[in-house]
Image (cartoon, rainbow, N blue to C red; front, side, top):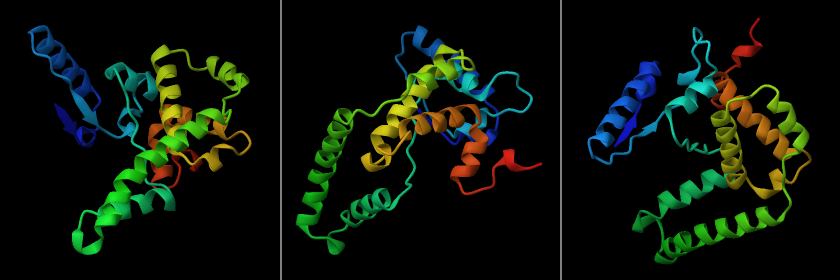
Length: 194
């Protein structure tokens, strides 16, 4: 079962109630998986003593980030894919190439990234270990870092400290989700205000 736009209620307690409902349904013999599509910032509660990252990982077993369209390279693929849906706008060859090229190109990129010796320096992990203690948060931050590394172009990841910076960005995304959402939407950071 897929739930969308629950973040508009701006109340993460709804996920606690849905998790309870899901557990009860599964105990009754029904095998139902609840899937939620929400923004991270819903878990940035001012009155909560629990960190946004801890709230997020508390409610969900698996978190899959949605990678935004962020560059010419990605938006170009969307344009090509959309064009190829319409026969009048594209040739049969275009539609065939698009379906074949995307996955082979992505597989080649992933293989190249895996063999390129990209890594996160252990000193950064040790430093984060002083501040982030929740195992679920750590698993989620590393998982999101891996997901973004798989999506970003290799040229970008090969620059000095790129993987460490990517990890820092994922920590920021998890610890300060509302501010991260503002920045990624082109809005002013809430932290910059006096």
